[in-house]
Length: 240
Length: 225
Image (cartoon, rainbow over all chains, first blue to last red; front, side, top):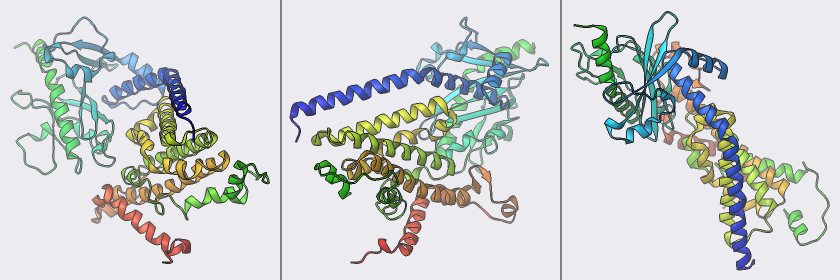
């Protein structure tokens, strides 16, 4: 049997050693990890305009060449600080609505067409979900959508990150109804009768109802915040 | 194991080769005779959780193998210095440190894979197999056999995960490693995926059937009582 002082000394020593090791590993790998996270985010943003670049160089060059970001306030006015990339949506959601900073990414095609990419963040079943939806220049028709998740159930809720099974349905859907009321794109259970027009809804994932509902709520919450900006842009382009 | 105990008591023993008969047995036994999942019934929870698709199951198997092998090795190296009253805490600290390192390394170098595994990597810490092997083997054995024991148990765990996940992915989603294996013509003819395969109970049934077949074939596992 070891003495008490030996036991205490041993416990302290092993704590210090493992603590130092972990701190070193974490600090040493931090640039690589942060680089990966930023690259992943750029890739996700590009995915929402239906681009699938592979490899660091391709992603970086597409992103820096084609995408500009602006930051909006709650009323839809651009604010001075114009680099949205560092904004953490989770932190913005915790703020009061009129203090939020809303990032908006604008993708410009070579022929001058633009897509407006709205980022979003919400809760699924097991953890956070997030995504990007790109709107065409009419600010109504969806061009593409991308969603991802931290830890939804594989094969069920996790299918929101599948292009074929989920994201593809969003293309061509509308976020306003025919009378220009904001509806968002509702994620509803397949086969259930709803009041939403076909162009305002997509099918949820069977077996992934809680994740589908979370996605529905996330899309609604985030798109709604951009409605003031969208309204002001529509008025400017079609003066009546 | 008698060879190792006699070293500790100071009686000289013959030096064993790296892949001697005993060491190979240490590596092979967990694959069948003392399989951690089907015989020792450890690590069932993760076997239910990560086996809906083959890819996460495969990476989980590799992760558990690496962690079991290295925690066995480290604990075996320091086994004589560990105060017995806090040995489980020390074991857990070693496991948690290794798992966190694995997680950080995955995030830094294979980000895609780490995204797929997400929470499961952290859950290796709570996998009973890892701590079970430390208590049952590494605390009494020399480093090299301990390392082999860790690898053997990791692979024994991995085999079950892969068998279960292959069946669940094929019958649950009609794919294997994400590629469609059940042809579209089957679906057109009225075939549907088995939704239950996507739910945890399916893994329990499959493991049960595996145990049944294994006990039918392996005479050593038949209860003599």
